[in-house]
Length: 81
Image (tube, rainbow, N blue to C red; front, side, top):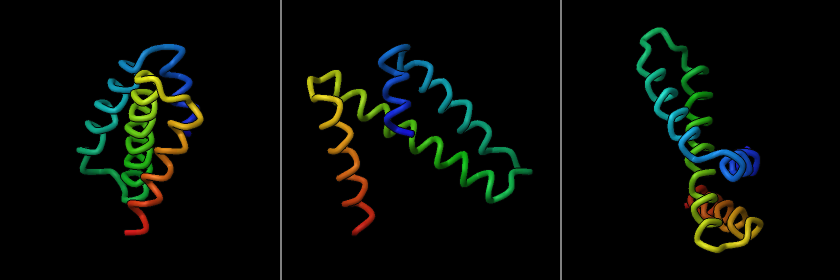
């Protein structure tokens, strides 16, 4: 998902992702949300922030494949802790 969102950012603009994050974060305030729905929204938000991070690395000159791999290594490293 992060790769696809990163490509979306490259083709369009990161503002679309940022606006979507704000919308999803607002939805999490609904008291009627079930835990499963909240988990899905949280996962989407997490992936969008990840894509923004990868896109930022690419804009700073890191090749796309390397930026994606570096992000995944950071995620895996944080899980292992």
